[in-house]
Length: 167
Image (tube, rainbow, N blue to C red):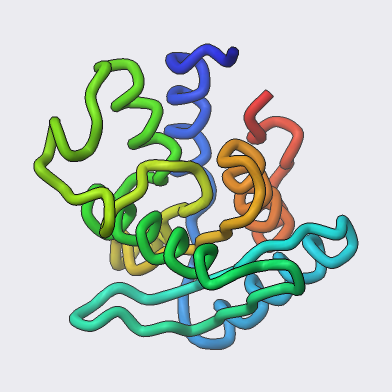
């Protein structure tokens, strides 16, 4: 079992470090394709989604790799809703809830059918604009979903993944 406090501190560091200078359709395409290439090379059956927040949210990249199901698409939506609501990674929200011994429904009165505080959705933060969207994957165990997104962001931004990944 992992130490929630240590992981939460590292996720806070990830969120502070992994910020994009801009986020547009081209950035989403590059980052989405990078995630797709990583997944294909490792035989991961995942769904990848990058979206810009707004009313409604704007999908900018989506890929469902072989072996995924419509359920993975629902997980992506539910995890993305957590990032849109809390402006934190879905894994950080889940770990915080785990520490408190509460669920999203108990703490925030949010329905499980619409929100999933499980790893795999990470906020897209542009320093000049704040949280503008998120990148989400679904299909691996939640910690692996989270680590894959962090790895892709590190590669895209030229950051050292070894120093930022969860142990």
